[in-house]
Length: 174
Image (tube, rainbow, N blue to C red; front, side, top):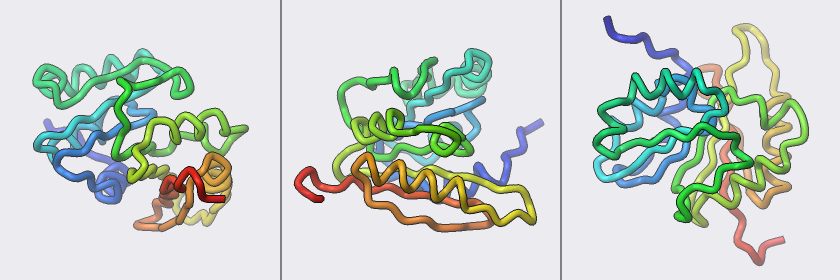
């Protein structure tokens, strides 16, 4: 029986929409549902999944075994602030419903995102609010944290999913 993909994950993958050769980082990859969909879109690209939960990483390993074996994906069991990648920047960094960016001080996490994303890359932080609830607080707080880290931001809403997109400001911009 095929796994059912939650609507918010499909929306997230459609919004992220990486180029076929993109280097993608998913923060809080959970069991790897979004990563599996992204791997199917890549030709020469690569997806790294990052999660601080050992259980999530184990589930993602099972789901993504073929992609891990063929080198299209890799998984990292660690916290975002402790992750340094392989020294090459990511074209796209994204997270779905990761409350790290709005429930408390997020400056260390957003600074790490700034270090990891390419100068012409994008960060997409997506949040779904419960049906019938119009709460833009997570998006507002996330946008503010990204702006403090050196990103220009815009927020879009698609099918109830709020997406805060951060674009790195040039180093000489105010």
